[in-house]
Every structure is written in C-alpha cells, then in structure tokens.
Image 1 (spheres, helix red, strand yellow):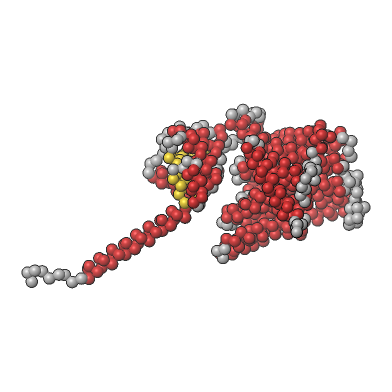
Image 2: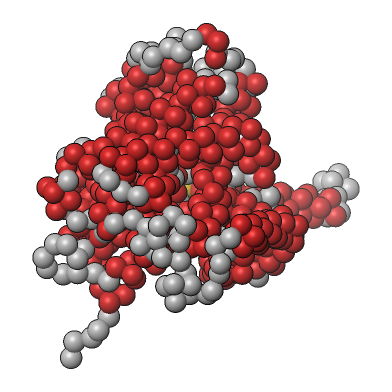
Length: 585
C-alpha cells in the first residue's frame, strides 16, 4: 500500500537530484550550487513531473540556515562583532538605501505604486545568509577581517529586515495595500502613535533578547554543554548542541520576534567563549551542509522559467541592481571608510546576491496587496541568477588580485594593510620541507624540524597561527593551502608534511605535490584505515594514524617501565644474595 510521506519524498528527491546535478555541475566546472538550484526547478510546481512539498522544503531550508548561523556564531565572538560596528552599521544601512532606491526606480518604470517600489527595493537590498557564508567558508575567510565585516554587515541587514517585517503590516494601508484590520487581522489604526508603539515594542523585544543572551546565555549555555561533555557520551553531546541551536532559534522567534537566523547566531556566539566550541562546530557540520543544500533546492522550487521568456529585460534589470548596483554601493562605502581595495572587492562580491529574507518580504508584500505577483517572480529570478553568478564574481576577484590588475583607487583612501597571501613572492628555498598546517600537530613538527636544523616553511590558513609561526622566524604563507602550492617551490623541495586533519583536503594537496615532484617524500595524517588507504592511493609515502601512534607510544612507555622494573628487581635480588665462598676457604 503506498504511503503518503511528503517529508520523506521532499528530502529524498531534493537531496538525490541535488547530488546528481551538483556532481554534473562539478564535472562541467560550474559551481555545485547551480546543480542544487536546477534540482529545485525540476521538483518545483512550474515544471512537469514530481512536485515536492514547497512548504516542507522551506522549513527544512530554515533548519539549514539555523545551523549555518549557529556555526558562524561559534567562530564569531562579541569582540569581533563590536570591532566592525563602525563599518557594518553605516555600510549596511547605506547599501540598503541605495538598493531600495534603485528598486523603486525600476518599479516606477514599470508603473507600480510607490509602496510597491519600496517593498520591491527592500527585497533586493538584503543578501542571503546561506550564500554569503558558503562563499566565505569556501575561501576560508570567516575569521579574517573581510569575513568579520561581511558577517557584521549581514547581522545589521537582518536586524533591519526584522524591523521592516514588523512595521510593514501596520503601514500597508498607507502604502496602498490592505491593512491587517481590513485583511481580518488585529485591529490597528495607522496613525503615528501606533507606528511608534510598534517600533518601540520591537526594539524592546530585540534588546531584551540580546541582553538575555549576553548576560544569562553566556553562562547557562556553556555550562549545560560542559555538563553533557562530562558524561562522556558523544551522542548526548551532539544532541545537546543541536537542541541548543534549534531551541534558542525557535524560542527567540516565538518570544522575541527576531529571526531564526539571528537567534541561532547569538546562541553560537555565546558558546564561542567555551573550549567546547570547536567540537560543537564539528558535530553540526554534516547536518548543516545537508540542510544548506535543501535551502538552494527550495529557492529553485520558487522559480517560474516563463518569467525569462515573458519579461527578459525586466529580469536583467533586476539582476543588475542586485549584482552591480549593490556591489558598487558596498565598494564605495567600504573604501570611503578607509579599508583596502581587497576588502572592498570581497565585501562587494559577498553581498551581490539576495535570498531568504527577500522571499519572506516579497511574499508578505503580495499577501498585503502591496506588490503584484510579477514582483515575486522577479525577485526569485534575480535571486537565482545572482546566486549562480556569485561564485564567478569571487573567481574574477581572485584573478584580478593574483595578477595585480585590480583597479587602483585614489591614494586618499589607502591605509596600511597586511599584504594578501596571493601576492606574496614565491619562496627562494630549495631542498626544504613544506609543512602544511600549523595547528597543535604542525606546531610541534615545526619545532622539531627547527631543533634538527632542517630548513622548512609553513602553509597555514589561520591568520593567528600564521602570525605565531612568523614570530618564531619561520617563512609562512597564510591562506588556503591549495592556492599556495605554486609559491612553495614543490619541484625543489625534499619533503612535504600534510599535518592537517582533514583527509579529503589533504588528498588534493598530496596529489598536487606528487604531480609537481614525483621524487618528493610525502607524509600525511589520517584518522582511520580508510583515510590512510585514500591518501596512499593519491601518492603519500607514509600516512600516520593518530590513535595507532598513540597506542605505540603508550605501549613503548609501558614496556620500558616494565623492563626497568625487571632490571631493578634483578639487581635487588643480586644484591640480596650472600657472597659465594672462596675456594681457598
């Protein structure tokens, strides 16, 4: 008997098609996101065949956003947030104003009302949480200055959209739509006093939530996870992390009216001060990635391909507002605040797309009769096109910076900045060792190499670890290891040590190093036999498994102690024996 299981069907079809089309996109050298979006179009209501449950897909995508923002919060302290407030607050507000005005201009050209133009412009002004964070994570820039500014900018945009979603219903009648009272909602006059009352209540709720998280949450959440960690159950720890992330996000939305994303971000941020933050991030990673894919599938389900045929010029205009208008505004604002051109380019590319808040806002506008249905289709089309184009924008920036051809701004804006890793000159060392990763394991290896007088250099993604290595006098290249290999003279090296824990990432590095120098000796680390076989298959000469090496060291220690004890016992027994009688006696 067939079962009515829309949830299972939505997950199975969404992830299955996303996997196949993402793999195809990867083979065609396209961003996997393109495949995820096309999977959504295929299972959406505007194409023939199987149609997934759109509401369920949207809720599943929301879980991905919650886990993603929780993970970002784990790497983003309150100090980081406050450090970028001088640029994030005016920058986000300035960009929202510019994008909104551009959207209103397009709406005016289409003959829409002023209220419709305002809602449409606001929908084009806010960037997607998932897309922005995915881009920063792929480039390992969340912990960098660029990443902190972009995330801070995003938080300000989210807060602005929360206020907008609260104020839009009471203002709908004034803007030419249907007020909540006329629409069957709660009765509310549209005078100045109710408006300010609504704004005041919103400010109080958000302030109360932030205050509770920073005062009570900073104590309670780490304390709960520490207690769970002491039980020794990894399963309970993983469950506790997920319960905190989802519970705080849901509670913040229901009790304080803030977004799920913002609630999850603050939950992660207050936990970031705990030593368990890194482990908590690892436990949420698999689910976060899976549900983030469902977000892109849910976006694709909203897309009606006919909009490209019926209104191609309007779609292009919307796309250019999102990618060029917003980017130009962000670039000029960042430069005006004295930041370097590399930071400005990265922020511009990060924000040149729209996503989840845009959909929520435009759907609310349609429900309030503020904007025509065509506006929703334009926003969805603009979102998909901008999401597809976003990775290409980052590649263009990399190409410009690598070749040093990025356009120069006036010297008035130049400030001293740390030189970008991609622009560093290649090493002049030869016959050296290349150490990839300067974490706990890598730092110990570097110290032993230095003690033995073995010349080596380090490749490290973390700015703090790279700075610590340079302080020890070691030549260090800071950035993603895959982009640094052409700078470390692999053909002239004698040894490569991949000290990073991720076998998948290490595999690409091992393969590249072996191709660059077939005679190179390559050492790597793995967590299990499968990882060891994988790395050896790609060219590693020797792969060490941490648990096995620990067992060997402990066994050696035990055997050495037992041997010493046996020798001591033997010597004691010898000393206790009476001296043998001499033959003369």
